[in-house]
Structure formats: C-alpha cells, structure tokens
Length: 299
Image 1 (cartoon, rainbow, N blue to C red):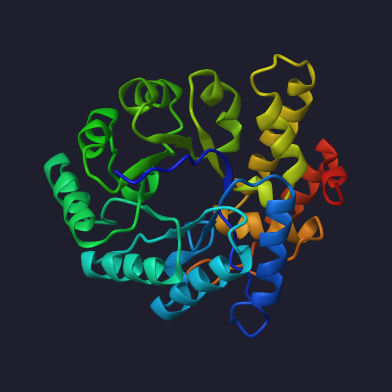
Image 2 (cartoon, rainbow, N blue to C red):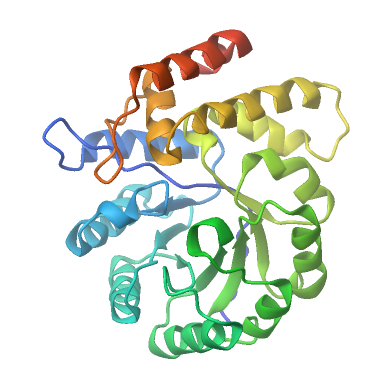
C-alpha cells in the first residue's frame, strides 16, 4: 500500500471558464494560490465541483498537469478520475500519473448502479492497471450506490487504495469507517458542515467546497473543531449559511454564483448546467446579506 499522510482540508477547485467557454487558466492559478495560502493541505483538480463531467479528456489531462506544475510540491494534488467507461477511468488515471498527481479520487461506476460484487470487481480492475494511489469516493446521491463501511474494509486490502471520501452525510457511517479502516486508510468527509462531528469520531480530513470562497472561515472551523471553543457556534452558522447558498440551485452552478457575488468570479457553469435564474441569484444574495457572509470576501 502506498504510504500517504493526507489530512486536513482538501478543496475541490472549481474550473473557471471564460466568456467564450474555455478554461481560464490564469484565474485557476489564483484559486490554487489562495487555497494554499488559506491552509489547504491538498487540492483536487477536475472533481465534481470542478465539473469533470463537462470537460474533455484532453482538458482534464491539461488541468491535472497545470495544477501539479503550479502547486510545485507545496501540497498533494489529487485528480478527479471518475468517468462512465472503465477504459476512460483508466485513461484518466494514466493522465494523472503522467502529470505527477499524488493520487486520484474515484467514484464507483456512474449510472450502472453495480452490485457490491461488481463494485469490488471494478476497483480491483482499476487497482491492477494503474499505480495511482486511490481515494475511494462514496457519493450515494450522485452514483446511486453506497460504498458501505464493510465494502470499504474489503477494498482497503487493495495495494493502491489509500483513502476514502465519504459523502453519505451520515455521521454513524463515518464513525464506522474510522473504526473499521482508520488505521489503514485516510478517512475524509465530503462536506464542511460535518467537520465538527467528523473530527470528533477521528476522521482525518474534509474534501471541501466552501474553502475556496471563505478559506479563513473553514481553516478556523477545522482548527477549532475539537477545542469546544464557543466561537465554533458563530463559525458553524456561517459554514451552514454557505451551504444554504449552494442549495439555492444546482450545486456546482450555485457555488460559482456564490463565488461571483463575493468577488471571486469563476465564470458560469458548462452545459448541462445553466447559470442561475434571477430568483435563485436573489436567494443567494439574501443569505449572504442576512448571514453577513460578505465579511469573508476579503478575509
């Protein structure tokens, strides 16, 4: 098994698009620098928040290389390597290895909704055919299947499986993961709203969305999670307010709109998502105003 010590905050970077629709590489580099300056201990390129499903294979490969080159060994870079076809997943893994990524974040097969036996066979096939260290990505809502703690324990025997990102949103599942595999795999949660309970049960990190908008907030929330500091209540209110912004439309479009309203423009989403409707933008503006989130814009 690859020896990794991943932990802390790993933001999944959005992919900024210009007016003509191409990747805005200059803006993307700024997001990388800001994330690291605000305490990110790793970054994820072309993950779900990065709209991997809307990128060409060449664009994903380019994004992996751009990220690794610009990070320049400051933190580990993980590549989002999920895809529909097994062959395309392996191609993404090969591109990540060629770019010098530290690992890949990988969903079970999308849409097919495989059985537990088929999930295991899929990850065994990937592990046999790439040297890339893998962070399993459990997202039942997106993938339609749940990589249960029992399955994760079985998969932890694969030599290249080194971590698990659990986006089930269920703290008892996270706790069971830590108990079953926490001595062998790095356990991450997929939502900053779960930082406090996840750290309490021994999770190692969070694969983050709001950090690239309000880095100091998420950094402080992570650092104080186990202290019992009363300021946690105030920080938590703001973390949950950001997530209400994200829920005001399709998640990945709403994240970009929230960034835009707070002066961190990353362009709009690509099809199949659309920029938010005016009433959705207004809903985000109201949450920002009511919660006073603007104070994090220049923090």
